[in-house]
Image 1 (tube, rainbow, N blue to C red):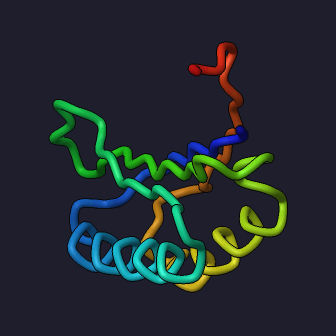
Image 2 (cartoon, one colour):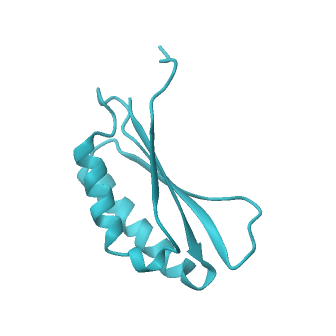
Image 3 (cartoon, rainbow, N blue to C red):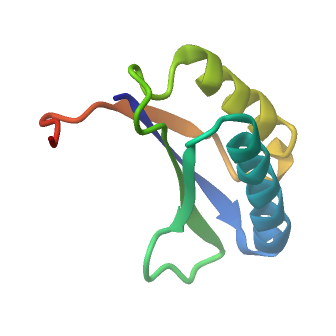
Length: 101
């Protein structure tokens, strides 16, 4: 099951607007894709002029997990609030080494 991990930086001045944008995006994606698990994390201990954020996406029970079509939808929606991100979004895909039974 393929999962996505997306990390990027957000300037402190944009944190509130970015949090609202990510929450709205993830809520909409969850509503459109039954069973989608979407989270937003922030790197612990940061207190500079920007924060490192990570979005995670998993689709348990789906044979392939997060497929290319859903990944493209996530990135297209994130592009609508790209001005709130300080630098590029880095997308990584991982699959489990072991499947739990």
